[in-house]
Length: 371
Image (cartoon, helix red, strand yellow):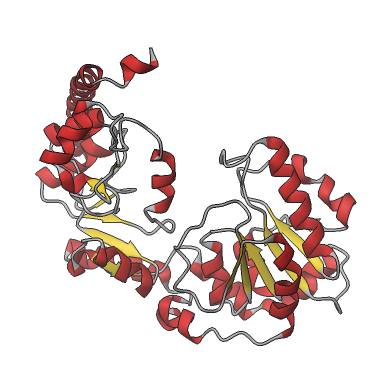
């Protein structure tokens, strides 16, 4: 059955099925646009399924500007990791004929001349429907008219991947005002947090955003807990350690770390307290951007073989790949001065690190509606 699902005939059948579903969704969306008569459209992107293709098609039909807000650090490496080894999208001798035909007729859809973003069936259906992005590996390369970015580095990266300068808008991210307020009031917040969690004020404070290895399918459960124990033990030996959990992580599953290592799991959102840290530790996460903006020395741990290059442009962080090196680098970061100047330029700190993000979005919306 798995072999049949990877054949050209089956993909063509799926493409027809998806196309007619898109047509049906387009009829529904057309009715909504006629009812609402919008002057502006805001979309999560231009490379997703669901109702998004119909939404983009109707907005384009009526020449309505489409804005994509900045939600998170969007790169190629994350989606690529999910495509490795999949016969339908990775062009090898094992791939079905349709994958090779698409390469020779729509080569711009392939990353590095080898990887499709969508399955062939979805690629063909979106092409027939008229909403296929020119290069879905890059958000914003489709029908949207405005793409918001958080920094000059992101602006440069998106432009390098083919987005016109006219599409790009530097506005920051919606979390920036909260992070900024935490930074401006960090001394007061730190005193409250240390008091709340019963931590000694004379000790250095580390905040660690634990990696979601098991939750994201990057490790089995046993390996995940081995890594969580190692990281928590290593960081808590001589410092106050506050642990931040992603919403996908079940707090009840991690609470044992508090008793075992004398650490505390934060109840507060990370964006509100990250500025109080003397050191921030995470894996490849956009929260590293937050810590740099707050002048907090940072470490990216990669004992997991990710080997992403997304943060290579940062000069203030250390990427640690060997467990034996962690303690020494933690000590160095805690007891030496970190130069953030280059990274602040990359992150456009002088422009976006304030409480004006919503105003910048409002101004963009005003301009695009010609209000």
